[in-house]
Length: 293
Length: 256
Image (tube, rainbow over all chains, first blue to last red; front, side, top):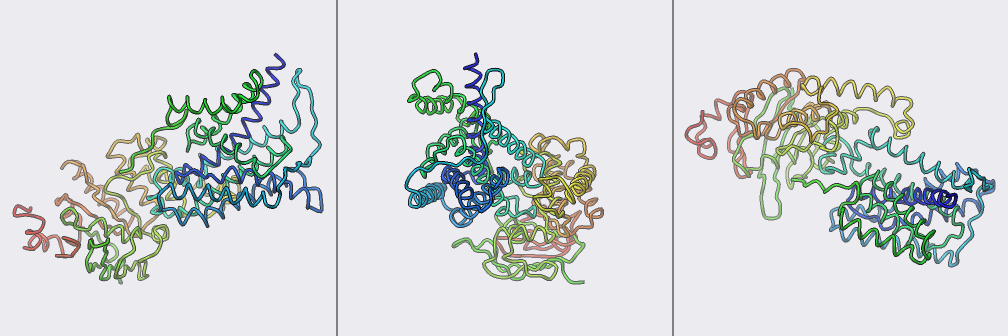
């Protein structure tokens, strides 16, 4: 029982990380119907930016400052990539934009690889301790991951459902052609979407690097794919779907490792994707696209 | 009093197709102007040119004396031109209230940070935005439906909501693309009165594209007739009704 509870805690914290990354895929898909395949590599960069900040900062930066800096830097980079690489292809066939995104991802990961060919150890950002809650070992880091992710998701949900930006975001997702006629610049909404979406991915990269403290240039690929899977399982384009998908994937992974040989983990997650898509082609919370006349 | 909108010798070509050819139109402030013509005459293309969706191949469009041809649609909308669409283009995933607020909120000024933290100007202007948008819905008889998604509204209510959304921009010029499309004679008569009320209540200049001749002749102060992208006639409703070219191209022998 304690073992089960222990695994549940692990599943929740992993699920939150997948959800945070998945939000970036799903937000961008929502406004552009395009998969930002560079997102996993921006996630990886989040961990490296954190490493750089900790290593080169003359003063020890506290965790919240680090987190905000990482989010702003990675978010800014996301905006820059959209502006330079994706926007010129807005009217081009979707496949061109997707290939460009893959290319951007490869450029980011290979640039990182050329600068840092070997895996690096992530320094401790704060003093991580384990404490015992009813026989279950919980680390400060896990609490932090859950707390930070929860705060970011609640903030995002409020932003999307309550704010002016959120209304515009939902309107762009529904019919981008009509939005400018309401006096709203679609480009500004798309830039903000990239800022927030990739910023969340950067935050996830930093948290992931802290919980699995060996970081490498290639770490974005597999984790990025999995978060993408999570977003698709939940229903790509649907914000709450990405969170749900993240939790499902996190739970499946942790419990398959807990009960089966660990090499089965990815086999099981990818099979899950296939099975869910057969029965729910638009994902669990996804809906068939609106047919625009 | 100078003209509110001047279409100066505008031509719009799509490849080899000439959708609008040397079109000239002058719309003084305060009038209601009708655009009629057969299907494919270029009426909606003209609206797309005025609202900046297309950039004219040749010619210029002036609004309040300023050249707006080639400006981005969002700029033109903020400058005071609102429009509706032939096939309703509401944000159907947003509530009726949100559809109006999205346009109304462009009139407000606060940064995303203030919005995120729900402080400062944001709080005040958000309350104001909701109150003003509700008042607008009230005027259109939609207040009771404010929290419904636009997709859940009846066809007539969607038509009214789209006009309300366009008016939330506080435009000085309102473009209506076939507001009576899909309506029967009785409904069209109600719409005519409704548009008359909007005109006086919001003090807005209107250009409307319409096939219901009764509505056009009743409501409009002046009319332009387009055929194959060319202006073939313009004048008062009485002049248009009597114009032999218009009767031949469009109205037919039995025009009322």
